[in-house]
Length: 408
Image 1 (spheres, helix red, strand yellow):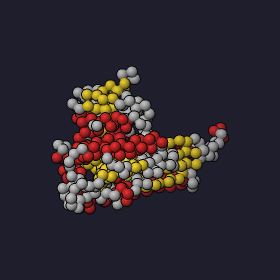
Image 2 (cartoon, rainbow, N blue to C red):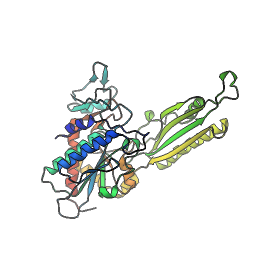
Image 3 (cartoon, one colour):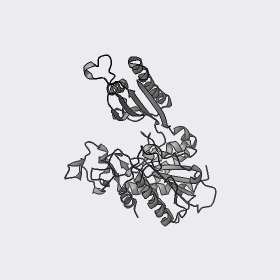
Image 4 (cartoon, one colour):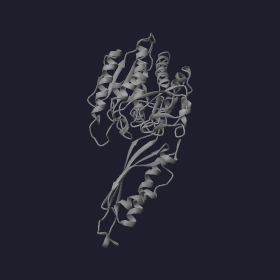
């Protein structure tokens, strides 16, 4: 089965994770897909495949080569983002010859290179999209499909390989994908997450990340007699947001530039709440950003009274770069596999995070590879059929190369 065929099957399963739930996996749909993947792995020949009590899928393919070589792994996540709907996904395949792609003629939903210039680089390829009303789930079901297809190609070949570990994780999109990951059972010397964007991307630098909850306690008084008495929590919340650097937000930054991102807000006169994510590649700048929140909170409380505004900041994950630099042969092997597969490697920083960031700090060095998809977390998400097939070949080439080299 080809990678895109698998992907279309997986895409139709709703697996959005839910940050409001305390269980793991946070949604039942992920468990449904987990069991499907476990059964598929067993059919491929990975007979120890299992779904653990937390919804993680693990499997191993034992080595068939001589010598002491690295045990390597491949990881992708099963959940999808809550930033766009994931129910009633209707995958469409378009032969792309340039110009606009009509996702829904009835609703006049168009994927256009005017808004998404990278489309021009896909002329002559086949692109999978939704009907413009949902995401398509390439983040990260494309990665799952590519790993599965690489395994099938490997098993049906006479290629020598070391031990291969595979895992599919729940709840990555809500920052919990590595929380209950069993590194010891996974049993690899290092691994790759297959969770990136355009074909050729290799990523081993990611944001340092934190979440921040800002709460404001107000005082409600009848507006007719409110002078010098009312404290409007919603207005104070707006004031706090205005104190943050205006252009240090996702829509004004790129590359290594960090940001503050207001993700949601609610409020009335008596109470307001703002939720942010804070991101920066540089640890010193990351610390400064968190201190900026504290400074703004102090300024608000000096004006409106102590305890008016509180900030609760929690670190989420850190830049994996420091854990990858001592073992850069992992990156070199990925680069070589791409070049041998006719793809130019593109080493770029992740403007986000992956399971691999936290796993690297848990003793499993784990950079990230491309999937061939773009516009993730969006109704305008797409993935290339040809890129998915090429990624499965790149994974296979990594496996083949590792078996030819002594353990490092």
